[in-house]
Amino acid sequence: MIVFTEDCDRDLKSKEAAASMARAGAVNKERDSLLKEGEMLKLREEFWAAEDLWMDGLVEGALDRWLEERNKMPNKKRKVVRVPVPDAYIHFIKENPTLMRELSDEEMAECPEHHRQLYVIQKLVNDKNRAYQKALIDQYNTFGFAYDEKEVTDDDDEKEVAVPKN
Image (cartoon, rainbow, N blue to C red; front, side, top):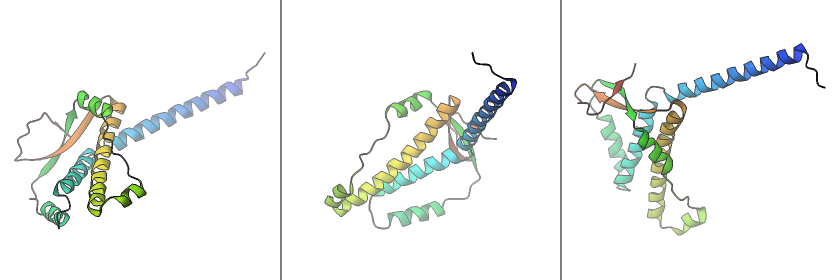
């Protein structure tokens, strides 16, 4: 027969309480990291910038032109709005992840220089897309819904239903 003393019971309760507080702290930390203002917007813009680089391919000076265009953007007053992401889209990206076959160093050595450069750019685009989609999926798994963010100016006509950020 096992006899538990009062001290043993107290220790067990304090350990359970500490574990519960640690879990709650981890969830709050995860929530804070998922919904920082502009985080989704930054991930999406990085993905689009990488895609633009892919579209331009290896055209001489494409990156320099892209940086110049970005710096010349007018300084209109912008605000960040949250746009709800449909559940169907989240389920789609869960079921159809963007996969790219990784090439070994030997395979890369056999490829012509042009193909190696295109592979590096495509890998960058794929990594940015994966990071953006992972952030959406993490948000959905944590909260049961996901929001994307976009920037709008006063001149823009909002065609989508958007929720202003506080």
